[in-house]
Image 1: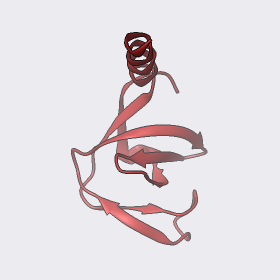
Image 2 (image 1 turned 180 degrees about the horizontal axis):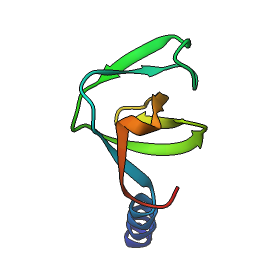
Image 3 (image 1 turned 180 degrees about the vertical axis):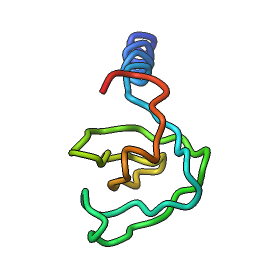
Image 4 (image 1 turned 45 degrees about the vertical axis):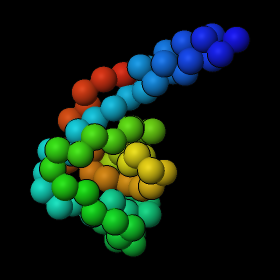
Length: 82
């Protein structure tokens, strides 16, 4: 049972859309607009999980549970389908 759980978890993780930040010091915002509040900043080279896209913005999750919106042009998708 435990082995089955880890197998399913690994398959789910492999299918997540992942991306790497390709710009230095861009703000992650509370919504898909430059006018929305800044939540935190990420630096170039950080890997994130892509949740969805809305226009020119991508909703991302940073490992540790932080979620926000980032310009799609600032990330390079490295795996998964979006």
